[in-house]
Image 1 (cartoon, rainbow, N blue to C red):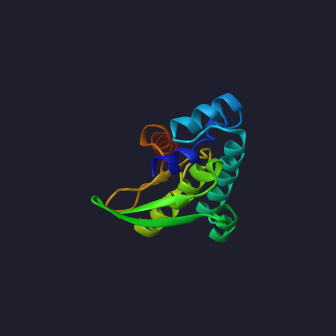
Image 2: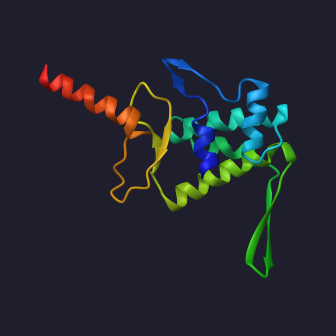
Image 3: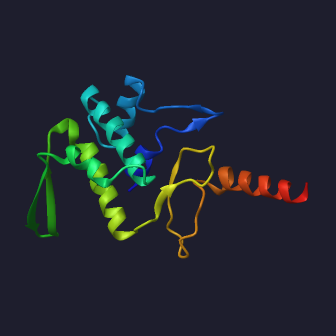
Length: 159
């Protein structure tokens, strides 16, 4: 799930300007390798495509069926080992990380439906995974977006 959030949040706004961790080949290669990928240009292109489709899907702007082309030719094979049931993912090497992110999204939607969502701050492009008991988290970070929003509302009330 960490890689899922990291990918969704790899295009943050910094001082009002969008930064893309996957745009620069060297930075993208580093990002992919830190997340278990190979860092090839084909992998980076697929990760950017996966990120954009997932962002639209999580925001409700696109149907989850838009993810189907990313899963073409992908197979999971079960194997019983001494440690229990294990699934082996079969996919082209450059697609493995993107497919793992899509599978993490699907597992998150199944286990924690509605808890992966965009930050409520309109000036923020980040996403959050609400693990709170009440399912009421609204901001990607209370220190950043949450405090700003609360301060803005307080200012408007007292003005």
